[in-house]
Image (cartoon, rainbow, N blue to C red; front, side):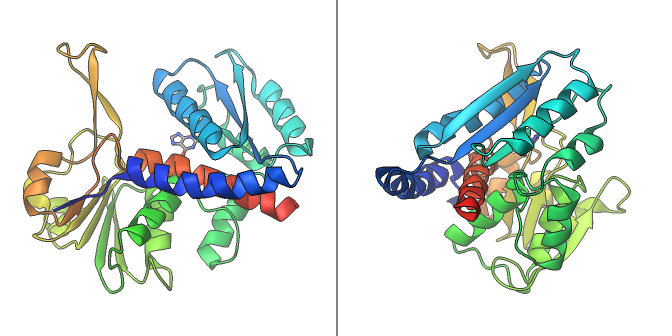
Length: 291
Ligand code: GUN
């Protein structure tokens, strides 16, 4: 059984990007620049953004974190976005989700210039992905694709069951897995809360991608012998025995699923670091398209 080690892979891949960036800066050009906007005080969001900024440093990128408190209005956020869109020294930026309830998330995502939308959430980039045209792919699905490719996981003709239909993971990863080429060419089933006999469906899967946001929702005995399991979940479960008071767990029962799986991502250290790497990859793409 193979542990799909996203942390190690992301570190290896970022070293390659670092070499490219060192070459660029040695020629006197500026480094790629990624910015993040963080609104409010969600501890998980803060941790994710921190990881993104840290990986920028490893890649030799410039990074900027702009924080706004929970009372930030939609209008203030849209003004900041306009400033970022117009900044010639900024290649790409993200607005960390979720946003506070009083802000219309889609309106904010629509305001990000598609050329700087390195999270790949803008409808123009989603449309380009759907049509197989060049553009930015959403970071988590792209990170999963890069991982499958680097581990040489066969996807052609395989039955891939995606559990969860969110705009940022389930829906786009189902599109990427069904596209022509590698990784892709899979037969994809997109399962969700209304799906009937989900355990029976997952038992037919050669590749399971769990992105439902419920701790250990996918049980070990749902996994077919030899299946590949990609766990996108990052759930905080109360754990008084842990110094932080919680532990992180995925959407899959890791121990149970490991019995039958041929390969599985751990949580943490699987898809999470690959998402951050994909963001770095997209930012370099943004930089290269400007110079
Ligand atoms: N919240 C959870 N995942 C993501 C992500 O990939 N990007 C952003 N911007 N917010 C998120």
